[in-house]
Image 1 (cartoon, one colour):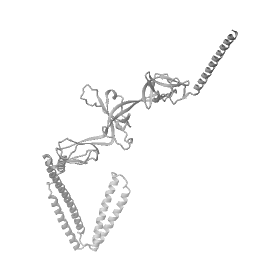
Image 2 (image 1 turned 30 degrees about the vertical axis):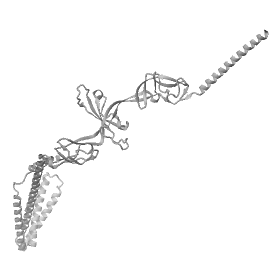
Image 3 (image 1 turned 135 degrees about the vertical axis):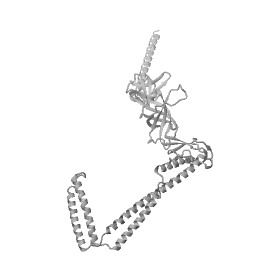
Length: 480
């Protein structure tokens, strides 16, 4: 009995020892596991909560419009004879694009051709007559001057042969006149810088002129007496006068032949207007480009019958482009000329072109629906210096979306979109706080530039958020 009693006690003690050992081992394992967990806290990629400026945009759909477009129409009816352009070709202003066949032209054009020829012939004749009359008048003036010169030469010879006494008297008169002329020159030198209306200057100037004439005349008489002129020379001078008179009379008769039969300037102007009017009608047979640009639409086919005002082609000036939008009346007051605008074109994968509002049409576009809200055309001028298409071009009617910069909101609490999470419980972020990951439910606002606005949350600037979804579980230890 005693042996059994001691055996039971020994077994109980052994059991407690085993339990204690297990407990100690479990505790040691727990402590070791905790230390290992604390030592192995995950390193996660993070982003920072921060403030940023959020631009405000007004987005509008629209389409590309060339700098200028012209619709080219036929000016007359007929059958197309030739087409001198192709779709997409660049043409120059006044370049002939197409022409009609002659035999199918309207009677008006044939009559205009006849009127053009007749009026041109009349104008040519007028201009020839006018030139001839001008030349005849100038010839008459020239002949008149030659006659006067011949008469002066003869008058200078009309002196008798002088005696020795006459020659000596002529020399004395010449010397006296020369002395008087030199005195007059000296007197005038003292006043010549005065104004023309000065009485003394005026008087001495006249005295100088009189003295000069007297001196020249006295000198001519003296030289004539001294040198003498033969009767043969006088006869020759008289003959020159007669010849010059005959030439002058003939020039006068030739000029007078034109009389009053010549046209006047008003008549010539009227005839030129007739030519222009006829030419405009004749030119209806051909159609020319009114601007330089690219043919963006063509309706030309040789042999086809066309009527007046039928469309031949559309030419677009592609040296620059607009983006045209139709803006509602409710948004119009938000816009102003000069606002920066980003245009993303559908054809080029959303490639963004910079521009600015160039014009806002204050007249609404007419709609067939009387209940429709008015819309207004707004043009955005695209920056022509951009080279974003690697050789590709813009074309009329390309569609896209314009984002107009309305205003900027400053210092908005926001996060990179990579930190945003969504599940069945809502939108949230994962913030690292006290070495652990915690879930924070958030409400978002606007998105801009890869960031999203955070509204009504306990997040603050500087908080670290997990940026790679699933990299660390919520509640698990983590570090940035």
